[in-house]
Image (cartoon, rainbow, N blue to C red; front, top):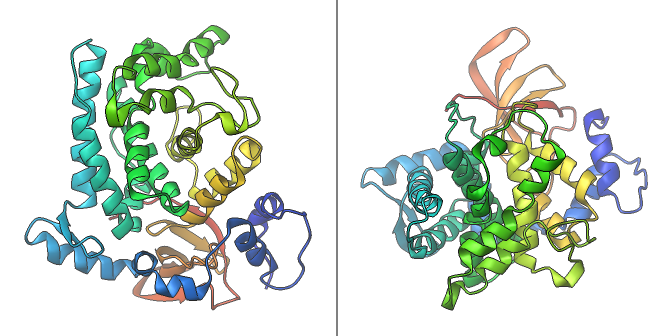
Length: 379
């Protein structure tokens, strides 16, 4: 088997010694080594991960059956919870209301967001891929509402941070705090001029200096909270600090930076890359991870980078891919021990759309590999 050329640069980043493994599948092995993939035995014993690799069609049937009564069901925690999509929009609307209160200098409570943080953690643990597909789906609206864009990015970043936290095996209480903190990580942006936040072109030096003040503004807004939320403001203040001292606003290094701030920082980068900007198209998941490893591998601890790569598949469920055979299909499940070789439902061949689709497992079919991926709007 010939390794697909588009992966070469990424594997050079992922191989610690830069060794050129010539044997078939060597690069896949190198990928697993750096990302710390679980063994097959561990994988088979983990009910959450068993659920994660379940075929998409099985998940769809399950979702429909439980939506008859209006809810999904979390078998892990034995309680009824909202569907991922409904929960996402409920959290978004509540955050939007709070952020408008902050913008207008009105009193606000953050207790509801903590309650939602508990629901988000519970839901992601039970149905990780269902929730992740909300991030990867192309949004058709062209909303110019500054506050709504800040809220949407904050919520997307919170989802990513939760998944990384789960990969790091953080305690449940810590995960809930992490989601809560991430939902407010960009609250300081509310004090910036909307024209600066929404500017289409490159920011001037003065504008960039202003944007870099948003962690301090966020600290000022959130430092009023005590009790369970006492550390919230400090985490927000340091979310742009980096272990090599290249961050802001204080230029802190290493252990001086709270781990939650670093998790939020890398999640913020990943979230931004997944969304389109006026000056660039949105990145594919693999491209986003590759860029983070390339640009920021000295800025974050290795265990956090590993958790990001390990928890977010190069080709997540729902992504459309093109194979070297010229066939086009949709990823329906992920092989966690072979992140570049998912299970694909083939929808088109060189002649056009297939009347009867077929399924291929790229982990088993060594003659096929993915040459490119793209987002689709089909549900």
